[in-house]
Length: 239
Ligand SMILES: [Zn+2]
Image 1 (cartoon, protein in one colour):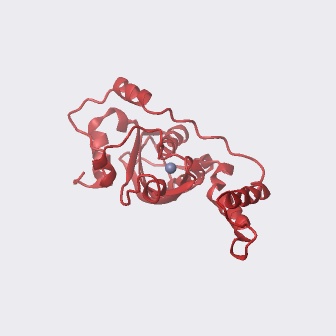
Image 2 (cartoon, helix red, strand yellow):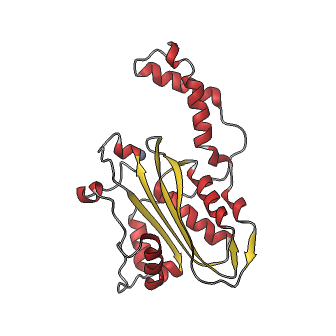
C-alpha cells in the first residue's frame, strides 16, 4: 500500500474489512466522480514493452544493495544471489511485456444475460512502493451484452496485470476498464482482496490485515441493487 495514503483507522488495520453498500443509498455518477477525484490519481497501465529484461543491470544493482547494507556479495552464500534475484524479477515483472487484451479477443455469442462471476482468482503481485509481494484473490463479474468470454481468460488477464510493479487500486481498475473496452458488457465488477507484505513484515506490521478494493462499471456502478447482488454473490450474506 501507499505510504502517502491517508492514515487508516486502527480498527480496519487489525481486522479484515468488507466494503458495504446500502441498497437505499442513491449512488450517483457525480458522487462517484467526486469521491474518485479526492482519492489518489490512478495512473493508466503502461503499454507492453519490447526487448528482454536487462539481467546484468539487476545483478549489479543487487551487488550494490548487498555492499550497501554491509554484506560481502562475493562470499559463498551470496555469490549466486544477484543472478537469482535477476531471474526472479524477470518472472515477477513479465506482465510488463505482455498485453492482457490478447486474452479477450475470442468471444462467443450467447443469449445468457445474467451475472457471470469468477470468484477466488488467486494472484501474486509486487507493490511498486516497496517492491514487496502482495497476494490474494480477485473476483470478476460482468453482465454480458450478447457475448461471453472463456472463464479461464479472466484468470489470464489477472495474471498479466498482476505481474508488474503494481498498486492494488490500479490493478483493480485496470482489470475493470479492460473488460469494458474489450467485451460488449452492460456492467463489470472487480473486487480484489490482498495481504500486503509491506504492511505485515515491515512498517506497521499488522499480520492478518486484508486490503479490499473494488471497481464498478456500468450497471454495477449505476444500480445499487445490481451492485448489492454481486457483492452478495462474492461475499455471501454476511458482509
Ligand atoms: Zn508497499
